[in-house]
Image (cartoon, rainbow, N blue to C red):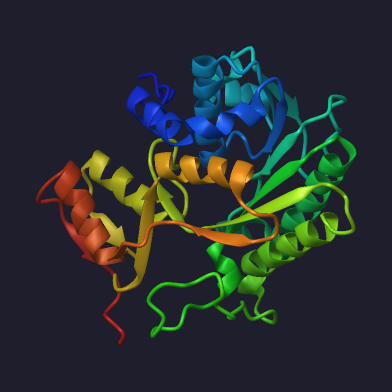
Length: 311
């Protein structure tokens, strides 16, 4: 069988991230950072860019990464698992044992995506997000953490009205709490509320909130619920790109290198308890996304749209 282990990120991407974050990293010199979700899509980009900055700038920093399966991650990204500045800690985000050392920074990026509802049910999804955030905050408050970044989601805004082209952070919408399908967005709202409560009353903990939208780049799963990942997989395998709906919904995709730039910038520089949308301003319909994927990877590939357009 061919080796399916993904290679390290392109050096051009890592240099791009460092170019736009170079002035931020001095605060990390000699410090420790704790990252939950460090072995997922976001986490791999954070770890690779941390590793690159740590080496290039001689920071002498350390990263502790929570993972459910250290051996699986070592197979997935051996260059990260074997990095001396990165330590893997096995555990469940809801109940992990705390490392003894203080950590000046925490990035809480561990979460089950909305598709998890189809696997374990909305209740388990909601409790995992809520209890995982509570546990991460308990760790931060007891281990000298100064700054914590929560990766929240644009799902906190609920259904996007058709007349609203771009959602501002001031948008007053919200998921319907009486719909089970709203569990992901409602849980992210509660996670933000937990951050607000944990950083009140002069605790010294600054919580920053990144409301993340859609992204693309290396490490993106090609077999999950991400439309662009599925389209790329279909094109690579030479089979028709299939769209389950009518192809009219719009998404915006930010390249993951720029995602990493903004997450690091927010951790170090964003004001506490102010949410920032993280994503691209350029929208594209699902149908156009399928066509663009086919044109880039396999021109002439068939695109099958299951639904009919519904105005």
